[in-house]
Structure formats: structure tokens, C-alpha cells
View 1: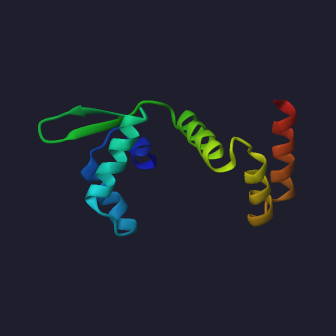
View 2: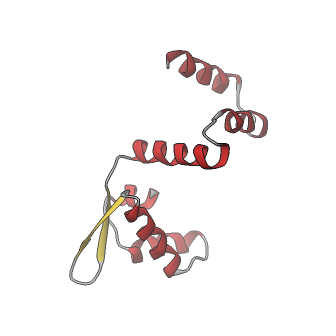
View 3: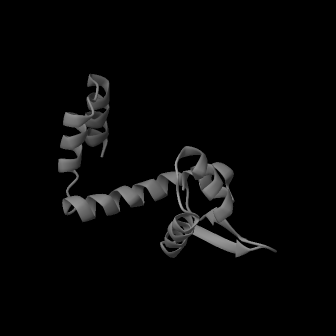
Length: 108
């Protein structure tokens, strides 16, 4: 998704080539993931002369929120507390980070 957001529209081949610069990945894996993202309505494809062109259907913030919610529901049975505890314990959040989390919590 990051590559699609950066480019606003792209093909499977374009995404594959960018990912290949970072690590070994199969073209079919990229194609499958983009198909899944399309099925989840995060991407929309249109046919051009030689390939499908994919575009994001939602802003980055909304998609990230949806994905985090889905992750919390699947992995933590809907409770964000274990995720936050893990982040605090394993990722050395600064005092400022923790204060910002507390401020956001009070705000909501």
C-alpha cells in the first residue's frame, strides 16, 4: 500500500520492481497481495492497454486505522491493551510518547 500511496497509481510490475530493490520477492506474491487488497476494497483497478493500473480507494489514515482495528480484533480479541503493553515494554517508548498516549486517551 505504501508504494501505491507514494505513486497514486501503479501496476503490479511497478510494485514488484520497487520491492525487488529491497528484498527478494516473487511477482506472483505481489500480484496476489494486490488482488487481496482490491478484494478488501483498499485498491481499485482499471484496465489499460497492457496492464491493470491500481489506485488507492481510501486515504492512508483510514486504511491504516482499518488494518490496525482488524489486527487488534484478530490477535487480541478486540482489546488494544495487550498491544499497548507490548509496545511500552518492548519498544522503549519515551516519556513524551507515553504522555502523548495519555493525552489522546483523555481526549477521546
